[in-house]
Image (cartoon, rainbow, N blue to C red):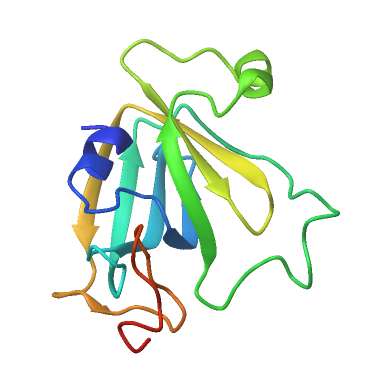
Length: 154
C-alpha cells in the first residue's frame, strides 16, 4: 500500500488534512505522520490518524517561502495540507533523487508555508488514533455549488 492507496480510503483523501507532527527514524527508515483527516462530506468532522511510511528512501522538506510565513508558520491545529502522487512540479522533478525501484513518491503541500514536503518510501500504513470522528475545528466546512453558510445556520 502507498500513500495514494491510503488517500483513496478516506472521504477527502489527504486533502484539507492537518499535519500535527512528522517523526523521521533514519535508523529504521520510517517516517510517521500524525494527521487530522476530514471524515464527512462537509468536513464537519475529522479524525486523528497516524500514517507510517516504511522503507523510507528520502523525506525532503522544502523551506517555507519567507514572504509567505507569518509568525511561527504554523496553525494551532497543525499545518494545513493537500497531497498527491509523484513530484509536486517540474522543479521537484529535476532536484529530487531518483525513485528507487519498488518505491512510491508522494508530495504534501503545506499551505502556511507555500511549499512542499516529498516522501519516498516502499510501504504506507494508516492507523486511527481516535475511535470515531470528532467535531472539526471552528471555521472548517466545505461548501458546494448552491450552498451558502446562511441557509444552514453556520
